[in-house]
Length: 254
Image (cartoon, rainbow, N blue to C red; front, top):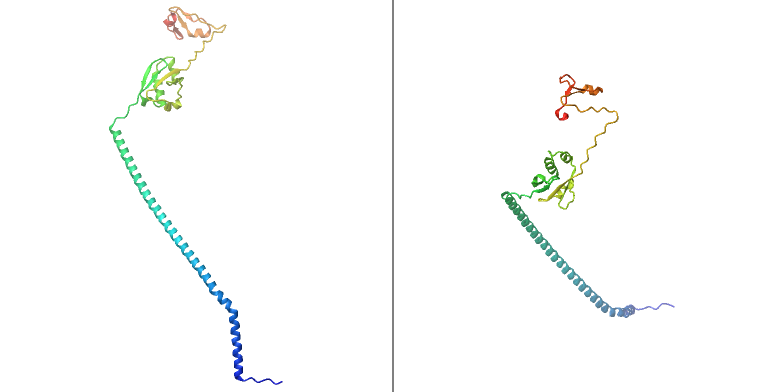
C-alpha cells in the first residue's frame, strides 16, 4: 500500500507530542529524587555544621592547651632562673662568709700564742719518772731516742735497752706497738716501760782433765809467759825486767 503522506503541520504536532511525553516521563522518574534531595541536603548540612563545631572546639581546646603549656613553661623557666639566681647569691654569700672566717681565724692564730700540749708522762724500767715534751716524743723515732739517752750509761740494762728489748704500756696496760705509736698516744698520757727478761750469761767452761792450771803467784814473784805457754813452770823470784817476763799485778797477788 502506498504510504500516507503527512502534512508538515501534523508532523510538527506529532513531534511536539513525543517531546512532551518524554518530558512528562522524565519528570515522573525524577520526582522522587527531587523530593529526597532537600532532605539529604539538610542532613549533610547538619553533619557539616556538627563537624565544623567539633573542629572549632578541637582547635579551641588545642589552642587553650598550648597556651596553658606555654604559660607553665614560662613560669617554670622564670622559677628556674629565680632559683639559680638565689642559689648563686647564697653561694657567693657563703664563700664571702668562709673567706671572712678564714681571715679572722688566721688573724687570731697570728695574734694568739700556739696551744701548749701537756707533756707525756714516762716511767722507765728503773722506776724513774720523766715528763717528755709532746713535740719531742709524739713520733716514735724521737721517743726511742729519748729512751736510749736515758739508759745510755746504765750498766747491764743499757745494752739491753739499746737493742730495743722492751715494751711500752699505756694506761690500760696494753702494749703500744711502735708502728701505731702516733695513733695511740695523747698529750698527758701515762706510759710505763717494761723490760724483756735479761738472758743469763753463759757459764764458764770447766777445765778438762790434764789441763795445766798455774798456781797463783806469790808476792814479789814474776810470771814467765813464754815458760807457761811451753808447759814449764814460769814462776821465778827474779825481779829482772827481761823480755818475756811479766810481774803479777797486786790485785792478783792478793
